[in-house]
Amino acid sequence: MTDTPELHLHNTLSGVKELFVPIDTANIRIYACGPTVYDRIHIGNARPIVVFDVLVRLLRHLYPRVTYVRNITDVDDKIINRALERDISIDRLCADTIANFHDDIVALGSAPPDYEPRATEFIGDMIRMIGRLIEKGHAYVAEGHVLFSVATMPAYGKLSRRAMDDMIAGARVEVAPYKRDSADFVLWKPSDGDQPGWDNPFSTVRGRPGWHIECSAMARHYLGETFDIHAGGIDLVFPHHENEIAQSCCAHDTDIMAKYWLHNGFVTMGNEKMSKSLGNLVMACDAIKTHRGETVRTGLLAAHYRAPAALPDSALVEARNVLDRLYRAVGDASSDTDAFDSGFIAALCDDLNTPAAMARLHELAGAANRGDGDAATALKTNAGLLGLLGQTGDDWAKGADNRVDDTVIEARIATRNQARANLDFAVADAIRDELAADGILLEDGPDGTIWRRA
RNA sequence: GGCCCGAUGGCAGAGUGGUUAUGCAGCGGUUUGCAAAACCGUGUACAUCGGUUCAAUUCCGGUUCGGGCCUCCA
Image (cartoon, rainbow, N blue to C red):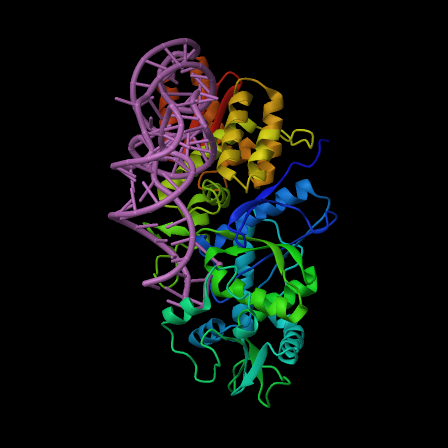
């Protein structure tokens, strides 16, 4: 094998593309922010799942070991409210939502992380971390809350490039009266009667963690005080990731929580961000139902991960066309670890340039269609790093839709081919039209007739 | 108001200081009973105005337009 290619990643901390230098080449450690489980994910939520799944596949290709952690947030006010609205228990809501989440990401072809911790499993770690922050003077108790004091951290604002004065000037939110500084954020807050809560040393009443502390605690547990990569959507840069950095660095007396911070751009609808508050959501499960998971995945990888990505129906139709072409070329080729393509790998190593990588796949498909069997193997092998082309071309063509039974289709094709052999083209064409009306498309090739679902 | 990002051919979408992105769609051809698929060929694209340069879509500055964060959000 050749030397490890150089991987370059755009680091939000520096604002530029940097050479990736692992802290420990024997174990690459990466953390991505996972879902808050009060509702199914939409395709905007699906983008980081898919994009960082590709990153982890690439890292696993480049390095002997990768530890990938993606949390599940199962304590949050949105969960409390949704459970009340639906009149079900929080446990039930979380269990159902997590099951749906797993179904969705499996359909999208994303591998599970090595660890998928739930926030409620780490309340003790959070309490200890908050305790340390209080001891060190970075946090204070006020009216049953524990707040992080941003004034105690000179580097606060570095990730999101914002100066404290600007934030104060621009603050539109009402500032809680017990905050020493309007930018101070909640580490721990009191819970009312039936809200989830835990006994704690900060107050005589039960309480629950603020939003950010869970990631600091879980990342520390699985990955240590300093790790390689922290990833998430670009809207998490501020305040979530900025606050994680503040908590972790102050609690651990480190300057660096993660060396590289990666953020994906939004999925847009029209010209706007797809978001809950705008109400323009397309749920992942709905997109998967009409277009298949692999098609949605292909659509999500069509644009560079940091650019905004529009995914209208026409984009998913085109993604389907792309997969039809690639699957036709790959046929039933197997993958081969010797078949990785330097151009393809170089594209992914250039800050995960999936469009350039897809272009290389198309070139391989062209070569395979010209009769180069090695190209088909290479196509299958390299596409695997994108989590694509995992099935055979035939299985893809026939799809999962069973409106018409396969044996019926094949019987009709046999009848038609008999008619063709008899030069009875009127009958042959009638059968083809009839199947087409049922969404079955025929292709007569030198090796016989193949079919696929439209 | 502060900070940040973007503007590429009919569409999607990379990239580059001077030479083909790629795919879809279109057009012409090969092949095919026909069709489909495949293959071959085919496109004066880089918002705008200045500047730097022998040369700018690519670097710098201004303008216009669009988007994002500053509030839960991937």
